[in-house]
Image (cartoon, rainbow, N blue to C red):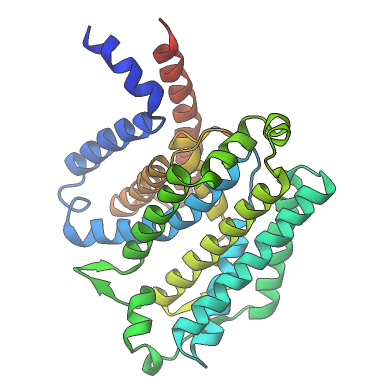
Length: 324
């Protein structure tokens, strides 16, 4: 009887599956790590990784909502980090982060225009731009890294933009919360949210109702690029350096976070809180492997297994919830 009463809740909230997975994994990690995983310092590290990955995942979730995909976000993350570091050593970090976000917006604009104007699948377009901008990042660094001199790592703007902590947590977490609230309001209380999901559900139907499908998709790609670059800038602000490989494979983690969080790859259904929960779960797994001394190469294998199992589990759970 109790299970039957839970069906409406599961139908309404796509993130239920990842929430259950997260609770189970946290319990297992805490019980098997002899206190090395479940401590304030390690949780702070996990949340910092979650913050930058979460920003990227929120942007990817918007693109997925339109029925498209953006796998160039890893390179966009790296380009944002490099742009921020190069400028932060010369101008105020607040100006540098705006410039980094503009770089991300430009990459998103390129992706969006190529997808909407050419009709080429977004998977192919963004795979190409992933390699293009990764190559540019490597060429710019020439095998070395960009960095901010230690003496320049001061001032409130540098601290606010990922270079400091607030209540023992990196300030990137505050930015993640702020961006989440803004996007949640946009999706829930503004026409853009309904139009975005309508485009993902059926672009033809949305177009017949007067929705500018191309403009909605273009906006989603631009926002996605801005958030990926912003995440890169915050990560660079914390580390103080970045090289051409910055953000490598993060595009896979961002997409996995969205899938784990209940976002439908076919479009029309997204969950922002689910995407963030997915990012937290992946960051927790990565941290657990480090704490337990497991080689990091295993993370990709475990990531793939979890994504497959979670996708199957989410589908099975929703099918069960839809049964009368």
